[in-house]
Amino acid sequence: MRRKLVVANWKMHGSIAQNQQLFDAFKQKLAPIDNVDFAVCVPYPYLFQAQVVLSGTNIAWGAQNVGKYPVGAYTGEVAASMLKDFDATYVILGHSERSTAYCESGENIAAKFVTAKNAGLTPVLCVGETLQEREAGMEQQVVAEQLDALLLSQGGAVFEHAVVSYEPIWAIGTGLSATPDQAQAMHEFIRARIAGYDADAANSLRILYGGSVNPVNASQLLVMQDIDGGLIGRCSLDANDFEKICLAAAAVR
Image 1 (cartoon, rainbow, N blue to C red):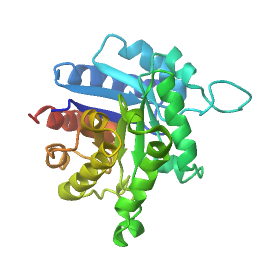
Image 2: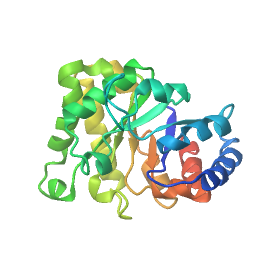
Image 3: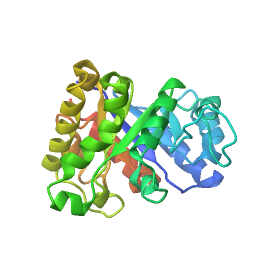
Image 4: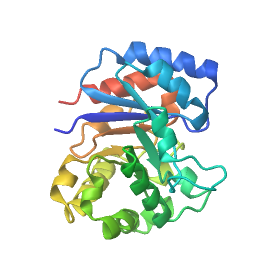
């Protein structure tokens, strides 16, 4: 069985004081859980704080985006090597809140993915469909196209030591969630799609679910065969809620 991974995505939330309270609570609540991996993806300015506070704990940290170029005259961008300077492990890529607002193409997200991997980061690639696409029965086609931006150019092996997060866009931040069966079906599809290029990479790949995961639905989602953890937004800003989700992950045997 693949080891579960629970990633907190703080989005554009936080302050030095608020972060400290959450970090301290996370350290206390998650320290006893030894069969799940944890990470917190923070806004860029707080990477140094995460490094200082979380070093030596069982909680990794990372960022929510990265530039696709290693260095250069790209005002406002942050290079993968800069994230590594703060011992970041993970970086979220292709989240719909970014790709929609900033019109990121699949090719651009794929380039960031490769850049992150080459720098020794673990990319968390977000894929998912809108409500209109699901209602039209296009959800698999949409997600396949998002995966193919990497598969067709890099092959299946690019997903070794990486993470994919299925995030139905209609569920993010809405309080709605895919049913466990809907989520499992898409996770199974993602794994099969990648297996068509590299079976070993697909079998070891951790595929997270990230669409309004909360303490109530976490147990039902995380017990599904191909759901290997969660990418948690709103509930990662509440230490008690986040702990309950992590405990649900730990309870899966």
